[in-house]
Length: 79
Length: 554
Image (cartoon, rainbow over all chains, first blue to last red; front, top):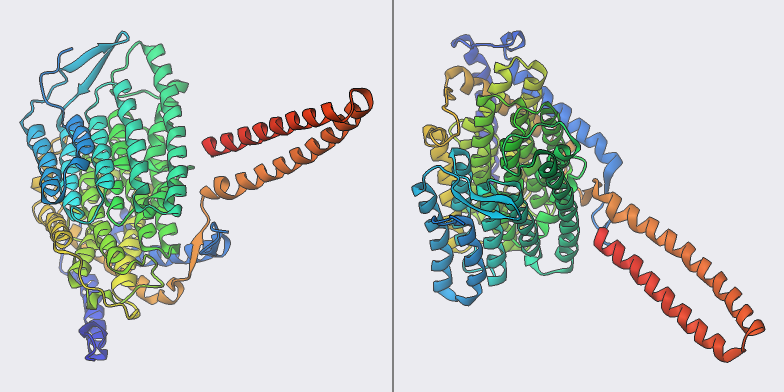
């Protein structure tokens, strides 16, 4: 059976290249536009990119650690 | 009594009760025409509160229409119409009936101008929504429904106590801005917050909603929490405490959704997360924040219903809900996948979708008030939303590993409903003035500035990067996460059993003493047998009383 477009190796490779390009562009665009920071912290170059990334990493790690404490097998309440 | 105008909420309730009398295409026509008439009527009614009558010395106001209530009723009617069409052929009449009574009660709560009629419809909403949870007709949903109704009846009791106290103190039952200055007003706030999914009783939502049928959850997502947002908006704007409660709900929703394996529970936690944004906005309390909250409630109802229709379609076609069983469905369900992705982009506030123009008003309000830490937390939460709902839901359901499942897209009525809501998400996103013109205060806000679009894209795209880089840590496991419901699902039964065991032991000792005494002192065996029987009956009655108490309370 022919493999679906989304699952072809070539597509995945192209999507990866496209994503990385877009990520670079969206940060570098800051050189060409004027942002209007309200708080001082917003003035840091690429603040939103760094903050978004770090927040998510923090949330994932926190959830993972909490998971060790509160995760139970699927049928926990069925017993 | 003076009530010459038509009441859209009561129309929906009565229509709900009539649905079982219609069959086939007549039923479809009936369930579509009712919300349509209600919507038309609400837009042709003048802003007023003149539908009132006296009851027990109090003036009950059944219709209090202004721009805020009209906004909520508009989105309610659009949702009932679309969700009704989504399941017009598949759902049972009982389910549709419960859904319409539920929607009608929610509409009546929004229209209520006094606390007593608000309370009556509030409770009716709890009953009808329980019937909707039972719509999937299995043991699990029955139990979840019982837990749900117990929590909501508890909330109802708290609210009733508050309203009674408030009416006694102020000699007024008019529902307007309430100052938090007495126990009764605190009780009213607690009653409202319980329905919003606020801590500590947050677990009821993710426990109960996903147990409803594939279509039942679409209705459930729209009304209970959003009527709670509405009453908080009207009753407690600018209450500082709500900012912190909202922030807790936001992060609670993200963390639990990240841990969750069941796609519909992910979306249920995400409801709490989104309602958290609204509660936070109500707490900030400026005109910008309240406008943002109202707008966000409007857009949220639509994109959440869209996400749940997409998840519901997957459940309907595959019978599976767990991410560990799903994956790769984009290959055979492209329309469901695309609509699900549009819903996911809207919830993540991507530019050109409805979430972008509503949520940003709340963050803007925090910025306008110079609340740096709250603003930072809201921005972090926006990134987190993209993580848990924006990527996680579509990724694990429609992409990731190929599960080998090849279901087709659902029946045409379900597809049309999804496409319609996906289109609304985009239309509101592209033309924000369509929504802004309906908001309670005039809007002086432009969401589409180069700066805003760029920063929002940076935030979201780099959240996406974090998701894919950390994917090994996000691997789905066949697990659940303990929540507050553990206290009443595990701890309380355990303690009850423990106490009952001791009671049984005590009863045995008393039995022995009694039988020894009666045989020695009184008339021997005949009386002894009768006494023993009496004691047994007494014990069984006692035992059943405890069971009944446990059943009712827990």
